[in-house]
Length: 152
Image 1 (cartoon, rainbow, N blue to C red):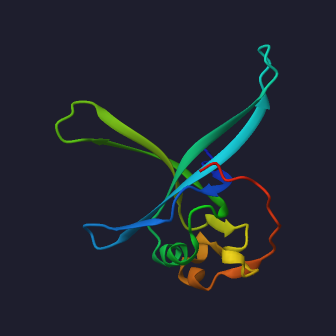
Image 2 (image 1 turned 90 degrees about the vertical axis):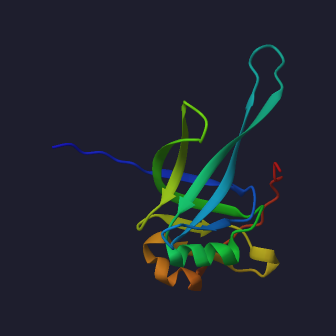
């Protein structure tokens, strides 16, 4: 018997508005791009602060969650996501080598929570991917004033 844990959690800023595409099967897919930042002091003599941004792809196929993201997921919003890592492999027409993409998949039991004020109205939206059908009625959550600079 084997056991494993596949869980990824991020807090970062959306690099663009959510993108929703129609699938050939009739379903929909939503894609998000989240930037996480870190900074450190360069120890190789200069002693300068180095800022580094890492970009993450987020994907979901859940209709209720997609509806909520279309309403609230706009560029620059601070967001928490919890999902599972997934690596896709495909071939592009005319190329011999495989292409790979690692992304965070939001499945039932995953989570999306906005941590800032949407358009200054005072209530932050949150939704659990496990409650995708109710995601359109996202509940309010506490928010904090943020003075962070957006890296884009």
